[in-house]
Amino acid sequence: MKKSPAIVIKNLSKHFKKLRAVDRISLEVVSGEVFALLGPNGAGKTTTISMLCGLLMPTSGSADVAGFDVSKDPISVRKMIGVVFQQPSVDDLLSGQENLEMHALLYGVPAERRKGRIADMLRLVGLTERKDSQVKEYSGGMRKRLEIARGILHWPKILFLDEPTVGLDPQTRAHIWQYIRKMSQREGTTVVFTTHYLEEAEQFADRVAIIDHGKIIEVGTPKEMVASLGGDSVRLSSKNPKATLSQLRKMKFTTNVRMDGTAVIANISKPQQNLPRLLKTLSNVDSVEIHTASLNDVFIKYTGRAIREESGEGGFMERIMNRK
Amino acid sequence: MLMGFFDAVYALWLREIKVFTRERERVISAIVTPLLWIVVFGGGLGASVEISGMNYQQFIFPGVIAMSVLFGSIFYGLYIIWDRKLDFLKEVLVAPVSRSSVFVGKMLGGMSDVFVQVAILLIIGIALGFVPSVWAASAALCVAMLVSMCMVSLGLIIGSSMKSPEGFNLVMSFVMWPLFMFSGALFPVEGLPSYLNFLVVLNPLTYGVDLMRYALLGMTEFGVAADVAILLAVSAVFMAIGSRSFEKMQV
Image 1 (tube, chains in turn cyan, blue):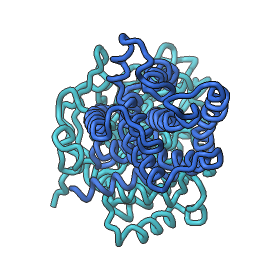
Image 2 (cartoon, rainbow over the protein chains, first blue to last red):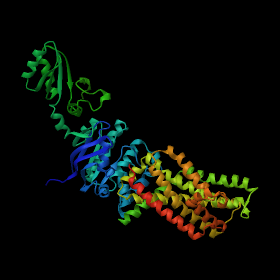
Image 3 (cartoon, one colour):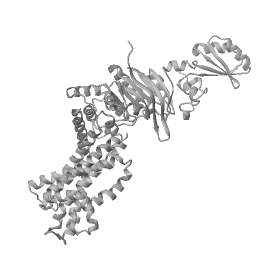
Image 4 (cartoon, one colour):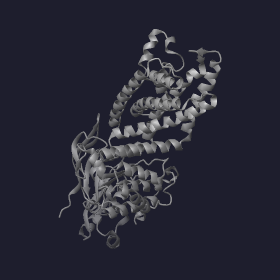
């Protein structure tokens, strides 16, 4: 039996005076999946999430979230969803426990279930000991954990997270994702998150939608999208490029062999096993570079630029040493 | 649906109470200014001035209390800008509660803050020699509630349409001081030239001051019924505008 989709978005747009922040996007999110909206800063991710949460009215198009239309019935939408914002929105002067109590009241958690549910959530995110301290004494990671506990407190069908790990160190980042996964698996919650970290999307999402300038570029599982590019590739500079070219073409594990300036590029399957064989066979090779295909390449393919220009990760300049 | 409204109002009111009691600086600063007015201004000027047959300090006491209500209420409303800047308001705006419940919750929170401030002022007043009867004190607190209902709503309206705290000073100069100056708090209304008189008549605080003076000193210029009616009417209007203003608030 096919599960009904958690979210159905049709031609959703948001215009701010002259700016088309979100431009006719259409998407479906499957119930129970972890879905990532990946894109650089300014791509329209936060605007999209704000519309899906019933916080921002769309300019045109429609979005059905958990069975309710965001334009027509935003309050019902908000009952069904939990939101963790990018900036912390827990009240500093209240304790963790008090923050959760207020949330329980606002979301209509039945009185007889409040205490137990709050205690349960605190335990799951490991904040039971500090529940009565004021949040202003919490670390960044603790605040995020409290927000996640709060987001799921009222048994939402969908949990939205806007850039959940921005500003957190890598260890905390990994821990936060452990909590998110534990919570969502236990409760069967659909998780939709936005991020500009490729690795986050690749590692934790079942499916990814790449967004840029308010438009959806591509949707699919990370594996599918990367595979569509042909997988990993090698770049060889050789004394005799033409000879190398024809040699590469004869090999079984290479595809899409082509010239790139004076270098020869080819897609290669199972590079760990096949690269040594390749190098044994070829004679004119001066240097080899391996490029592990990632979502960044998918992004470059469709937009012509890297998702993170400042880190200079684009293209085929990755060194072998950086491969895991 | 109605249960949800009251739960939301309660949740927000409770939060305001907790935050108020934990930010002691707010309570202290809310008390110091009126205290200075009474002691310095009232005592200093009062030594040589007598109004309506009574000591000037006594005359301005109700007005000074009304002033603390005015300032306390409007500042409280403006504090919503901090809620927004610190993104606390996002949590409330994304919750499945109506914006009017958010407004009412905040308004009740403000009224509670003012209640505490006025109670403290009355106690301090006793120490300075103004000993009201139990009836007078209770009446004063009720009047304070009525006036703060009006002024907190006004503060929330202004606060929800302001984008940053830089506007605070503008509000002080163009709203708070004029409201206070033209309210009869510091001097009787008849003393003003007629072209300024209409400002006094249009000022809702004038009726609040008049009512406060009736509660504490037994004198009234406009009559209790008129004062109460006008304050209620203006409050209703401000509350309606305020709820609308909250509905339009973007995250």
